[in-house]
Image (cartoon, rainbow, N blue to C red; front, side):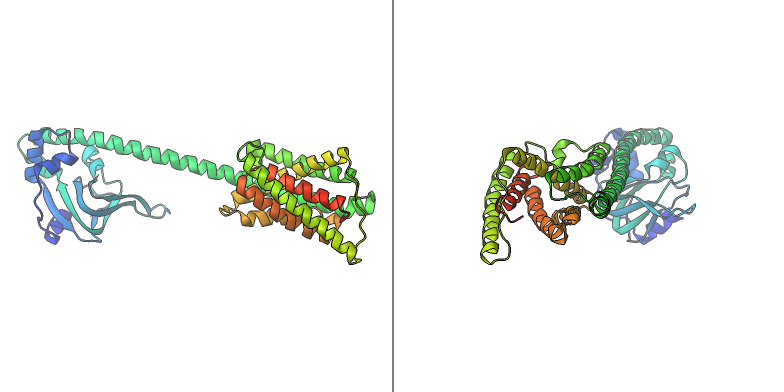
Length: 378
Protein backbone atom coordinates (compact mmCIF):
# COMPACT_ATOMS: atom_id res chain seq x y z
CA UNK A 1 0.00 0.00 0.00
CA UNK A 2 2.80 2.38 0.96
CA UNK A 3 4.73 1.45 -2.19
CA UNK A 4 1.63 2.18 -4.31
CA UNK A 5 1.28 5.63 -2.69
CA UNK A 6 4.93 6.42 -3.32
CA UNK A 7 4.64 5.39 -6.96
CA UNK A 8 1.63 7.70 -7.35
CA UNK A 9 3.49 10.54 -5.65
CA UNK A 10 6.43 10.32 -8.02
CA UNK A 11 6.59 8.01 -11.04
CA UNK A 12 9.85 6.87 -12.65
CA UNK A 13 12.21 9.71 -13.44
CA UNK A 14 15.85 9.99 -14.60
CA UNK A 15 17.32 6.93 -16.29
CA UNK A 16 19.60 4.71 -14.20
CA UNK A 17 22.51 2.87 -15.80
CA UNK A 18 23.65 -0.63 -14.90
CA UNK A 19 27.02 0.85 -13.88
CA UNK A 20 25.28 2.98 -11.25
CA UNK A 21 23.68 -0.13 -9.73
CA UNK A 22 27.05 -1.86 -9.75
CA UNK A 23 28.51 1.18 -7.99
CA UNK A 24 26.63 0.57 -4.72
CA UNK A 25 26.36 -3.24 -5.12
CA UNK A 26 29.94 -3.92 -6.31
CA UNK A 27 30.18 -7.58 -5.31
CA UNK A 28 26.85 -8.77 -6.75
CA UNK A 29 27.22 -11.01 -9.79
CA UNK A 30 26.59 -9.38 -13.16
CA UNK A 31 23.65 -11.65 -13.97
CA UNK A 32 22.04 -10.73 -10.63
CA UNK A 33 22.60 -7.05 -11.33
CA UNK A 34 20.84 -7.30 -14.66
CA UNK A 35 17.87 -9.05 -13.05
CA UNK A 36 17.72 -6.46 -10.24
CA UNK A 37 17.93 -3.70 -12.82
CA UNK A 38 14.81 -5.06 -14.47
CA UNK A 39 12.64 -4.84 -11.34
CA UNK A 40 14.02 -1.74 -9.60
CA UNK A 41 11.78 1.26 -8.99
CA UNK A 42 13.12 4.82 -9.36
CA UNK A 43 11.10 7.76 -8.04
CA UNK A 44 11.27 10.96 -6.01
CA UNK A 45 9.81 11.18 -2.52
CA UNK A 46 8.66 14.65 -1.47
CA UNK A 47 9.99 16.16 1.75
CA UNK A 48 8.06 14.87 4.77
CA UNK A 49 7.33 11.42 3.31
CA UNK A 50 7.38 8.65 5.93
CA UNK A 51 9.59 6.20 4.05
CA UNK A 52 9.84 3.51 6.76
CA UNK A 53 7.85 3.09 9.97
CA UNK A 54 9.27 1.24 12.95
CA UNK A 55 7.59 -2.16 13.40
CA UNK A 56 6.43 -2.50 9.79
CA UNK A 57 6.89 -5.84 8.00
CA UNK A 58 8.16 -4.23 4.79
CA UNK A 59 11.61 -5.29 3.57
CA UNK A 60 12.49 -3.05 0.63
CA UNK A 61 16.08 -1.87 0.15
CA UNK A 62 16.59 1.80 -0.76
CA UNK A 63 19.48 3.60 -2.42
CA UNK A 64 19.60 7.39 -2.10
CA UNK A 65 20.55 8.84 -5.47
CA UNK A 66 20.04 12.40 -4.40
CA UNK A 67 18.47 13.73 -1.22
CA UNK A 68 18.37 13.50 2.57
CA UNK A 69 16.73 10.94 4.86
CA UNK A 70 16.79 10.84 8.66
CA UNK A 71 16.62 7.54 10.59
CA UNK A 72 15.19 7.59 14.12
CA UNK A 73 13.63 5.53 16.90
CA UNK A 74 10.12 6.62 17.81
CA UNK A 75 9.12 7.60 21.34
CA UNK A 76 7.97 4.65 23.46
CA UNK A 77 8.34 3.18 26.97
CA UNK A 78 8.75 6.71 28.42
CA UNK A 79 11.73 7.31 26.10
CA UNK A 80 11.86 10.31 23.81
CA UNK A 81 12.30 10.11 20.05
CA UNK A 82 15.98 9.56 19.23
CA UNK A 83 17.73 10.33 15.97
CA UNK A 84 20.02 7.53 14.84
CA UNK A 85 21.48 8.66 11.53
CA UNK A 86 21.39 11.22 8.73
CA UNK A 87 21.66 9.55 5.31
CA UNK A 88 22.39 11.41 2.09
CA UNK A 89 23.61 10.81 -1.47
CA UNK A 90 25.18 7.43 -2.20
CA UNK A 91 23.98 5.59 0.92
CA UNK A 92 21.56 2.71 1.38
CA UNK A 93 18.94 2.02 4.03
CA UNK A 94 16.47 -0.71 4.89
CA UNK A 95 19.03 -3.49 4.44
CA UNK A 96 18.60 -5.02 7.92
CA UNK A 97 15.00 -6.14 7.37
CA UNK A 98 15.94 -7.45 3.92
CA UNK A 99 18.61 -9.59 5.56
CA UNK A 100 16.75 -11.00 8.57
CA UNK A 101 13.09 -10.68 7.49
CA UNK A 102 12.12 -9.11 10.83
CA UNK A 103 10.03 -5.95 11.38
CA UNK A 104 11.67 -2.59 10.84
CA UNK A 105 13.85 -1.64 13.82
CA UNK A 106 13.65 2.11 13.16
CA UNK A 107 11.71 4.72 11.21
CA UNK A 108 12.94 6.83 8.30
CA UNK A 109 11.59 10.14 7.05
CA UNK A 110 12.49 12.15 3.95
CA UNK A 111 13.88 15.57 4.93
CA UNK A 112 13.98 17.10 1.45
CA UNK A 113 12.83 15.87 -1.96
CA UNK A 114 14.82 12.67 -2.40
CA UNK A 115 15.40 10.54 -5.49
CA UNK A 116 15.42 6.83 -4.57
CA UNK A 117 16.08 3.45 -6.13
CA UNK A 118 13.99 0.75 -4.46
CA UNK A 119 14.42 -3.04 -4.58
CA UNK A 120 11.43 -4.95 -3.21
CA UNK A 121 12.22 -8.60 -2.29
CA UNK A 122 8.70 -9.63 -3.41
CA UNK A 123 9.51 -8.42 -6.93
CA UNK A 124 12.84 -10.27 -6.84
CA UNK A 125 11.19 -13.56 -5.85
CA UNK A 126 8.87 -13.32 -8.83
CA UNK A 127 11.87 -13.52 -11.17
CA UNK A 128 13.22 -16.84 -12.48
CA UNK A 129 15.71 -18.16 -9.89
CA UNK A 130 14.45 -15.41 -7.60
CA UNK A 131 15.66 -17.15 -4.43
CA UNK A 132 19.23 -17.39 -5.77
CA UNK A 133 19.14 -13.75 -6.84
CA UNK A 134 17.91 -12.67 -3.41
CA UNK A 135 20.60 -14.79 -1.71
CA UNK A 136 23.30 -13.13 -3.84
CA UNK A 137 21.96 -9.67 -2.92
CA UNK A 138 21.81 -10.54 0.78
CA UNK A 139 25.39 -11.81 0.73
CA UNK A 140 26.57 -8.52 -0.72
CA UNK A 141 24.55 -6.53 1.78
CA UNK A 142 25.92 -8.56 4.71
CA UNK A 143 29.39 -7.19 3.99
CA UNK A 144 28.02 -3.64 3.83
CA UNK A 145 26.13 -4.13 7.10
CA UNK A 146 29.26 -5.46 8.78
CA UNK A 147 31.17 -2.34 7.73
CA UNK A 148 28.39 -0.08 8.99
CA UNK A 149 28.16 -1.98 12.29
CA UNK A 150 31.90 -1.59 12.75
CA UNK A 151 31.57 2.17 12.19
CA UNK A 152 28.66 2.37 14.61
CA UNK A 153 30.60 0.33 17.14
CA UNK A 154 33.55 2.69 16.86
CA UNK A 155 31.21 5.66 17.36
CA UNK A 156 29.61 3.95 20.37
CA UNK A 157 32.99 3.25 21.95
CA UNK A 158 34.06 6.85 21.33
CA UNK A 159 30.84 8.10 22.92
CA UNK A 160 31.40 5.84 25.94
CA UNK A 161 34.95 7.09 26.29
CA UNK A 162 33.75 10.70 26.17
CA UNK A 163 31.12 9.92 28.80
CA UNK A 164 33.72 8.30 31.06
CA UNK A 165 35.97 11.33 30.67
CA UNK A 166 33.01 13.61 31.51
CA UNK A 167 32.24 11.55 34.63
CA UNK A 168 35.87 11.74 35.72
CA UNK A 169 35.87 15.50 35.09
CA UNK A 170 32.81 15.89 37.32
CA UNK A 171 34.48 13.85 40.05
CA UNK A 172 37.64 15.94 39.79
CA UNK A 173 35.61 19.14 39.90
CA UNK A 174 33.93 17.92 43.08
CA UNK A 175 37.32 17.30 44.67
CA UNK A 176 38.59 20.69 43.53
CA UNK A 177 35.48 22.46 44.84
CA UNK A 178 35.84 20.83 48.26
CA UNK A 179 39.52 21.74 48.26
CA UNK A 180 38.76 25.39 47.48
CA UNK A 181 36.17 25.62 50.24
CA UNK A 182 38.49 23.90 52.72
CA UNK A 183 41.44 26.18 52.01
CA UNK A 184 39.25 29.26 52.30
CA UNK A 185 38.02 27.96 55.65
CA UNK A 186 41.64 27.41 56.73
CA UNK A 187 42.47 30.99 55.79
CA UNK A 188 39.59 32.32 57.88
CA UNK A 189 40.55 30.15 60.86
CA UNK A 190 44.17 31.30 60.73
CA UNK A 191 43.09 34.91 60.38
CA UNK A 192 40.30 35.18 62.93
CA UNK A 193 41.22 32.56 65.51
CA UNK A 194 44.86 31.55 65.57
CA UNK A 195 46.67 34.75 64.65
CA UNK A 196 44.40 37.20 66.51
CA UNK A 197 42.58 35.49 69.35
CA UNK A 198 44.40 32.35 70.52
CA UNK A 199 48.08 32.38 69.59
CA UNK A 200 48.36 36.12 68.92
CA UNK A 201 51.44 35.51 66.78
CA UNK A 202 53.32 38.12 64.80
CA UNK A 203 51.96 37.54 61.30
CA UNK A 204 54.70 39.65 59.72
CA UNK A 205 57.51 37.20 60.46
CA UNK A 206 59.02 34.78 57.94
CA UNK A 207 58.25 31.91 60.30
CA UNK A 208 54.52 32.61 60.23
CA UNK A 209 54.61 33.04 56.44
CA UNK A 210 56.10 29.56 56.03
CA UNK A 211 53.76 28.00 58.59
CA UNK A 212 50.71 29.50 56.88
CA UNK A 213 51.93 28.40 53.44
CA UNK A 214 52.52 24.85 54.68
CA UNK A 215 48.99 24.75 56.11
CA UNK A 216 47.72 25.50 52.59
CA UNK A 217 50.23 23.24 50.84
CA UNK A 218 49.23 20.06 52.70
CA UNK A 219 45.62 19.89 51.40
CA UNK A 220 46.77 21.29 48.05
CA UNK A 221 49.30 18.56 47.39
CA UNK A 222 46.84 15.93 48.62
CA UNK A 223 44.22 17.06 46.09
CA UNK A 224 46.85 17.35 43.34
CA UNK A 225 47.84 13.76 44.07
CA UNK A 226 44.21 12.56 44.18
CA UNK A 227 43.44 14.32 40.88
CA UNK A 228 46.52 12.79 39.29
CA UNK A 229 47.88 16.11 38.02
CA UNK A 230 51.44 15.76 36.64
CA UNK A 231 54.08 18.35 37.54
CA UNK A 232 54.24 19.66 33.97
CA UNK A 233 50.57 20.71 34.21
CA UNK A 234 51.48 22.71 37.32
CA UNK A 235 53.98 24.73 35.31
CA UNK A 236 57.07 22.76 36.41
CA UNK A 237 58.23 22.01 32.90
CA UNK A 238 60.91 22.84 30.33
CA UNK A 239 58.21 23.80 27.85
CA UNK A 240 58.65 27.49 26.87
CA UNK A 241 61.10 27.92 29.76
CA UNK A 242 63.25 30.50 27.93
CA UNK A 243 60.30 32.60 26.78
CA UNK A 244 58.83 32.64 30.28
CA UNK A 245 62.22 33.34 31.88
CA UNK A 246 63.10 36.38 29.75
CA UNK A 247 59.60 37.79 29.93
CA UNK A 248 59.58 37.31 33.69
CA UNK A 249 62.98 38.99 33.98
CA UNK A 250 61.76 42.00 31.97
CA UNK A 251 58.65 42.45 34.11
CA UNK A 252 60.75 41.93 37.26
CA UNK A 253 62.96 44.89 36.35
CA UNK A 254 59.92 47.04 35.61
CA UNK A 255 58.24 45.99 38.86
CA UNK A 256 61.37 46.77 40.92
CA UNK A 257 61.68 50.22 39.34
CA UNK A 258 58.02 50.97 40.10
CA UNK A 259 58.30 49.72 43.70
CA UNK A 260 61.47 51.71 44.48
CA UNK A 261 59.99 54.85 42.90
CA UNK A 262 56.78 54.38 44.93
CA UNK A 263 58.76 53.96 48.16
CA UNK A 264 60.81 57.09 47.38
CA UNK A 265 57.72 59.12 46.50
CA UNK A 266 55.90 58.13 49.68
CA UNK A 267 58.88 59.19 51.77
CA UNK A 268 59.28 62.51 49.97
CA UNK A 269 55.58 63.24 50.44
CA UNK A 270 55.87 62.35 54.12
CA UNK A 271 53.27 59.59 53.82
CA UNK A 272 55.49 56.68 54.82
CA UNK A 273 58.95 56.61 56.33
CA UNK A 274 61.26 54.16 54.62
CA UNK A 275 62.63 51.31 56.74
CA UNK A 276 64.36 49.04 54.21
CA UNK A 277 65.15 45.44 55.10
CA UNK A 278 68.76 44.32 54.58
CA UNK A 279 69.60 41.93 51.76
CA UNK A 280 70.54 38.68 53.53
CA UNK A 281 71.20 35.58 51.42
CA UNK A 282 69.42 33.01 53.63
CA UNK A 283 66.08 34.80 54.01
CA UNK A 284 66.26 35.92 50.37
CA UNK A 285 66.63 32.33 49.09
CA UNK A 286 63.87 31.29 51.47
CA UNK A 287 61.58 33.95 49.99
CA UNK A 288 62.38 32.77 46.46
CA UNK A 289 61.22 29.21 47.22
CA UNK A 290 58.27 30.66 49.12
CA UNK A 291 57.33 32.57 45.93
CA UNK A 292 57.74 29.44 43.79
CA UNK A 293 55.41 27.40 46.01
CA UNK A 294 52.83 30.17 46.09
CA UNK A 295 52.86 30.41 42.29
CA UNK A 296 52.57 26.65 41.93
CA UNK A 297 49.37 26.69 44.00
CA UNK A 298 47.90 29.98 42.77
CA UNK A 299 48.78 29.69 39.09
CA UNK A 300 49.77 26.07 38.39
CA UNK A 301 46.89 24.55 40.35
CA UNK A 302 44.12 27.08 41.08
CA UNK A 303 44.23 29.07 37.85
CA UNK A 304 44.72 26.01 35.63
CA UNK A 305 41.91 24.14 37.39
CA UNK A 306 39.49 27.06 37.05
CA UNK A 307 40.30 27.33 33.36
CA UNK A 308 39.77 23.60 32.89
CA UNK A 309 36.52 23.22 34.80
CA UNK A 310 34.97 26.51 33.63
CA UNK A 311 35.96 25.80 30.02
CA UNK A 312 37.59 29.23 30.02
CA UNK A 313 39.26 29.21 26.60
CA UNK A 314 40.59 32.76 26.85
CA UNK A 315 41.79 32.21 30.41
CA UNK A 316 41.36 35.72 31.84
CA UNK A 317 38.32 34.83 33.93
CA UNK A 318 40.40 32.11 35.56
CA UNK A 319 43.31 34.53 36.07
CA UNK A 320 41.06 37.00 37.92
CA UNK A 321 39.23 34.31 39.91
CA UNK A 322 42.44 32.59 41.08
CA UNK A 323 44.06 35.95 41.92
CA UNK A 324 41.12 37.15 44.01
CA UNK A 325 40.84 33.80 45.78
CA UNK A 326 44.55 33.78 46.59
CA UNK A 327 44.24 37.39 47.70
CA UNK A 328 41.61 36.35 50.26
CA UNK A 329 44.17 33.98 51.78
CA UNK A 330 46.11 37.12 52.81
CA UNK A 331 43.19 38.66 54.69
CA UNK A 332 45.09 38.41 57.98
CA UNK A 333 47.42 41.14 56.65
CA UNK A 334 44.50 43.50 56.04
CA UNK A 335 42.22 44.54 53.20
CA UNK A 336 45.01 46.42 51.41
CA UNK A 337 47.08 43.24 51.32
CA UNK A 338 44.14 41.41 49.71
CA UNK A 339 43.86 44.11 47.04
CA UNK A 340 47.62 44.20 46.34
CA UNK A 341 47.85 40.41 46.20
CA UNK A 342 44.88 40.20 43.83
CA UNK A 343 46.18 42.92 41.50
CA UNK A 344 49.71 41.54 41.40
CA UNK A 345 48.24 38.05 40.97
CA UNK A 346 46.52 39.18 37.77
CA UNK A 347 49.95 40.19 36.40
CA UNK A 348 51.52 36.88 37.47
CA UNK A 349 48.55 34.94 36.08
CA UNK A 350 48.70 36.71 32.72
CA UNK A 351 52.39 35.85 32.36
CA UNK A 352 51.66 32.23 33.28
CA UNK A 353 48.75 32.13 30.84
CA UNK A 354 51.08 33.04 27.97
CA UNK A 355 53.64 30.27 28.48
CA UNK A 356 52.30 27.74 31.03
CA UNK A 357 55.64 27.86 32.81
CA UNK A 358 56.15 28.94 36.44
CA UNK A 359 59.59 30.49 36.01
CA UNK A 360 58.24 33.81 34.70
CA UNK A 361 55.57 34.53 37.34
CA UNK A 362 57.89 33.25 40.08
CA UNK A 363 60.64 35.71 39.09
CA UNK A 364 58.21 38.65 39.02
CA UNK A 365 56.69 37.57 42.34
CA UNK A 366 60.12 37.25 43.96
CA UNK A 367 61.65 40.49 42.69
CA UNK A 368 58.52 42.61 43.14
CA UNK A 369 57.99 41.31 46.67
CA UNK A 370 61.69 41.53 47.49
CA UNK A 371 61.84 45.12 46.21
CA UNK A 372 58.96 46.03 48.53
CA UNK A 373 61.05 44.86 51.50
CA UNK A 374 64.42 46.17 50.28
CA UNK A 375 62.96 49.61 49.50
CA UNK A 376 61.14 49.85 52.81
CA UNK A 377 57.72 49.99 51.13
CA UNK A 378 56.62 47.07 53.39
